[in-house]
Amino acid sequence: MKQLFGIDNLKTYLIVVAAMVAIWFFKDYRFQKEENKRQSENIESIRMMDSLRFAAQTYTKKELDEYLEYNRQDLQAFLKQHNIATRRIEQIITQQLNYRDTTIRNVNLQPILDAIKKEKAVKVPVVDSTSCMIIKGYVAFENDTLSLNITDRKFKNKSDVMAYWERNKWSFLGIKTRLFGRKKATVIIKDDCGRTETFVINKRK
Image (cartoon, rainbow, N blue to C red):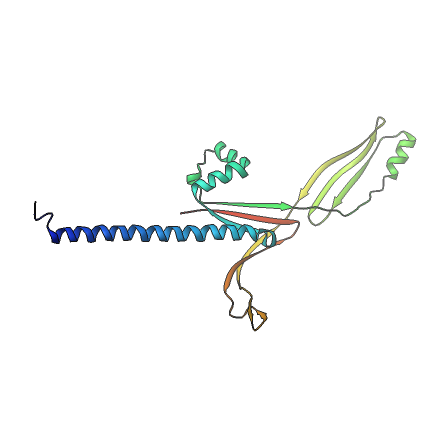
């Protein structure tokens, strides 16, 4: 028993404990460093959303649950409906397209007016088309009723999300340059129609 708690053995125990504590502090420091980097990247990505139209976030399971609860109740309900637990999710990619067409177009409705004067039924086809959207229907007059009937709506868009790297600008003798600047990841989105915003959520390992 005395040998077990001898001076030499006690020193060994202290060295082992000190080593374990040092390893724990090192792992905790590395974890906190990675967490700070992750959160800083998340904040920077959100800040750049307006200009890049692209944001990528890395969430823990808890953060993902909070995001769904407070920001995407529709997606949360969808996941529950299909029995998909957040612990099983690896990545969520959300693309939102905004499209608005303000082009003024005119359709000659004189045949309708003539039919109304003669109290005759008539149907005039209407087509409103662009490279992005096609709307088809007809204007009809029948039984003293004038109506606009839309029969077909088609919308198409192709989005290309391209990731690339470029160098940050820096100042050399008061001159802004990208030469030898620090590399940074950048995203550009090409849309055939409208404006697409892409939001990517990665699950933290």
